[in-house]
Image 1: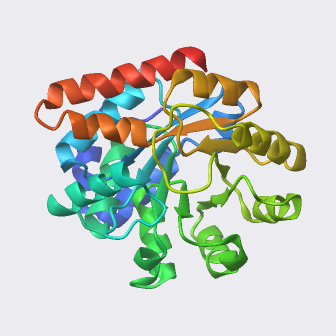
Image 2: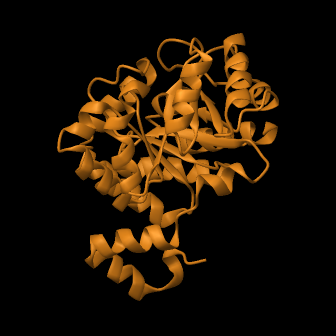
Length: 290
């Protein structure tokens, strides 16, 4: 398989032509969700805010996560009003924005990540960022950066038709959320519009590390798996290896770890070497039980 180190001539071509770079990236290095979910093991999906705490450190942290066994990356474009996120990720958004991260720079950073690692990438954004310059332009730019899917955190499945055909036309998978209080009919509604994976929210409320895995999370996994063959990944509050083991035993196809990892970035801002090591160690702990 081609890699960025396979030739200086190709690297020079990629730098000169962003459009050609995007086409080459998508043609040569697009690991798919299907490949991951058909592997037989529960996917480990770390979440990071793009540009937190700065571009280079963000790349270093992501590299540590991939090296430690991450199967998919879920990456957020920093936003000034992330209503679905708790204080840990809100502060990460603020750090990234203060460091100069913008939506355009975030997608450029995704492109750099895609060049380095052959791993599926999901993008998490808020509605305002998609509609600012028009959804067609956003999805086209997202596809050119090399992402596999887009999840709009504050877009209800009731409004899926606003983006579903645009995403599919751009060659991107769709990801939608289901919550613990979702009816069977609503879960099926989500499944019909989801081509990547269903993001199962373990608890009502915002993101954030929690001490225990809610019983509602196990029930949601079980119900969703019964109703659809679309892969189901659990997120919100996954902070311990035992949480991951329990969710995997219930049938989850993937586990999304966000606030716990982002918290390690925050707590090690003064020691970036330790930051990278801490992220690598935590991913390794989760990998051992999945």
